[in-house]
Length: 249
Image (cartoon, rainbow, N blue to C red; front, top):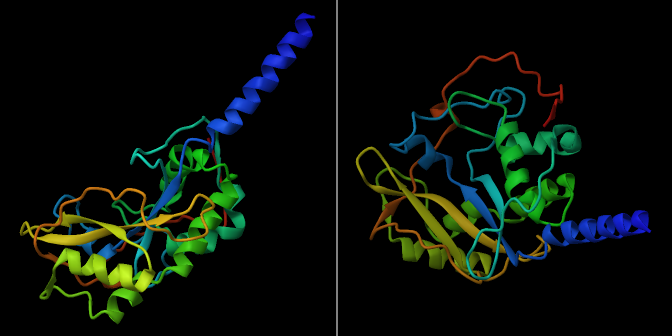
């Protein structure tokens, strides 16, 4: 009898854990980061080439910052359960991750730590397995050519031209078919610069939607989209071999 009761509790626990993983979030924020702003942000010590850059260089374009699970009330849904992060699960995606979701933080690194944080904080709440979660993020990034949308509306990276943030938001909405949120940082002169763009995605992580709730950010009356080139990334020597996968705990 006791054995049957214990088994029943185990089944109930597993059922609840499975539902916790995805039942409480309503949509995703796909966050795209403009590297030019990061490199000129007064709060960081510049930016560095990823240790994988020689083998996997990336275009001078928006990078993935994260795929965040959120509720319609505007609350982040995080850490639904505790699990390990296995880099080997991403073996078939690793090249795209190095290109689309790198880390340009200093000191240079291979980006694995930020993927681990993304999985442990948000991926575990998505209802997807680890491979599918990152695959969805990459697929969304390939669908959304944010830099082309901006250029189509006459918005180009420049250190001299400033833009009205509301105009930028409207331009993206026209090109993307959905509203977005824009987060700004400040450069060393205290001027606002467009740093991250929050795109809302449905619960299946396959379709851009109008945001159920927009994050509240301040970009002032004007903001820059500063220039970026790979030459701005500091060189860093490393013996890291990207083909040698290591399982992370």
